[in-house]
Length: 402
Image: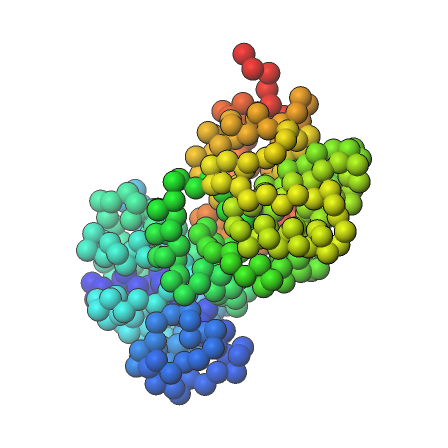
């Protein structure tokens, strides 16, 4: 059972998403290996045992409310307890762990959307696992001397806990995020990230994963600009809180398909809006959208990972659901100060740690950390509007240079 422990974190996460998706598309589970078609087929490698494993996980997906899970972070790893008082669900947990242990041993990885599983699978030889099968499920302890692997174990444990707590909601959220990564999945995304020169930002209003591709802006527009988003994003309240003048210059970093940029343009008829994004598809989409809607005060700009390439100084620079993607943040935002006019402001909106919406909690950044980092980069917090149900909203100004 040495290898079984390594899979318990993965099973409900990876197979669960595919199972729910397959059911929602009316797919049949009787197909043999490699026969699965449609979107679910691109999400995970298929083999002769895929349908059986996915069918088993469907039972766990639809019985998530009967599963309880506790997680303890250890100095060098993780301890989890996953159990159920329902005898059938408890047995399903144990059978699933046993079934999936062979996959890890043989390198037949399943991964729908987790960005941490590739690290775990690629470093399986560095992980010491202890598994105890109980009457009601399984207790797993995993430790490693590699700090990166320990962090991945802990982050993935958090992902799985979210799935147990939220059930199909978390499954579908993760599945959509995984589909956004494209056919090469999170491992390919990580490779692209590693090859980049320490990227600083990705596109805004991003799906709930840390690394992903945004090709196909037409499809992303359906997600980013979904009218249902207005209920919790409260764009008009956000704009009102920024107290914009008709001639304000606004920089929307990570503008995506223009959810905020288009609204800003209407509010500053004598001003300018720069929609900045590193993804060329998004830049082209926003430029075409602005032209189509007759908003000549919008300019779409393809930013560089370490430089937003803002054409002129701005009155307001805003990042919506982007801050948690930024690497080398202190250097990035220290440089950004020169892009603000005197009295200019920097607004950061991102998901709270306890929000039901947003990226996996392991990828989020607490508002206290944002305040500390931006203070180090030379900013002072000026306002903290509290009307957003899922996100924090922080407004900063550069401090006087000493």
